[in-house]
Length: 337
Image 1 (cartoon, rainbow, N blue to C red):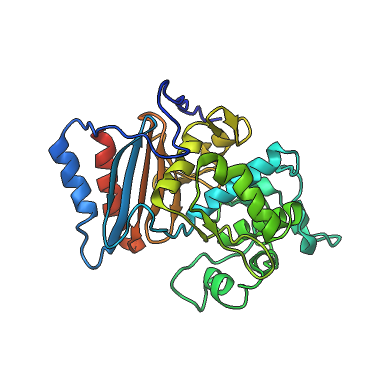
Image 2: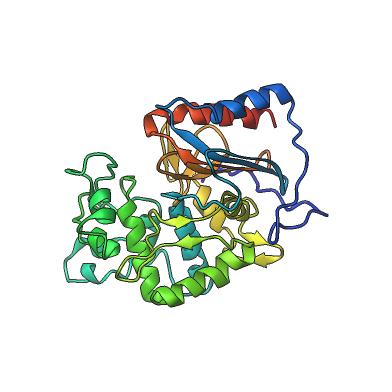
């Protein structure tokens, strides 16, 4: 198993951000260089899109916060696939409560017929994007995309059922294939465990959002009553930072264990890696570093850097082809802190 960089402890004497973020002056090694790279994120070309928000939390304090294009600290931002990492947290809470065994076969009704090879798929394999199910994760071509069909057309009323109907094309656990459909299968399992939207919202708020002070979090549900955890959990940038900070602290918030022991390490332990990308369990990893992040369409990011005790949130709208410029600037910011 890959040895992970230890997560930092919450600093003594610093208030938790449950009510508001404690603040501290920004202290980069080179203030002019920091300003230059931050300005670059807010001075994008038309092709590069727009940055709405950039937040930097270091050692528990908000040290940088900037908004543009009409956004502010109360302006809700789309999570897109950052919601997948929220789903990871919800599964962890259910596991801590003894309500789900991620290593057991996933309780999906469509897969229970005798001889159906999908019966072997576990929630663990779904979280690692190694289910073996067919799913076309394409955001442009509606003719081939399962994501567009699931979120906008014939699958939108029951996103979990749409994804669960897909055939098995690889043996479970043998191949990484990023899939929004597998997340929505997990969310339908959570619905069956916790209950429909009224109960699920209470579970999400009581067990996750309220303890962290995430008072703006707005999850969306499909008509079948499942959280669309592949894509839809709006929140303010400050609340996204709170979520990242929970993971930076190993799933403990102000003395209360929210996530099971080891759940964050499970998220950031590599299960798929190439020189260009790496994945754990519903969290992305940055190859060659200890950083892990919740990532979403259009360049949404919650970065967690254990070595520098940083959480960085970027919200905006940037096409995937232009996104490397964003991450180059953020890498430069990290190096200056």
